[in-house]
Amino acid sequence: MSDERTPPPPPTCAECGAVIGVYEPIVARLGDGTVVQTSLAAEPELERGEWSRYHRECYARSLAA
Ligand SMILES: [Zn+2]
Image 1 (cartoon, rainbow, N blue to C red):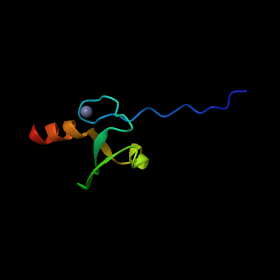
Image 2 (tube, helix red, strand yellow):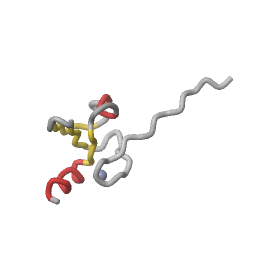
Image 3 (cartoon, rainbow, N blue to C red):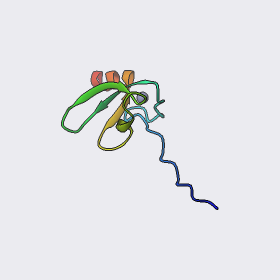
Image 4 (cartoon, helix red, strand yellow):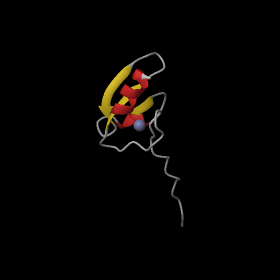
């Protein structure tokens, strides 16, 4: 019997498009400008919802561009 749900796609970086590892430092940003520096291991709820997720260095690069 197969009752497995399709696993959700892994979170990806809004800047470079690569998968973000659970333990990597990330920057998460909301549409209202809220920015959080954390990791998905610390705050797994950031994997869902309205957040834009970036590798920390990619976020810095996006600001510099
Ligand atoms: Zn990135």
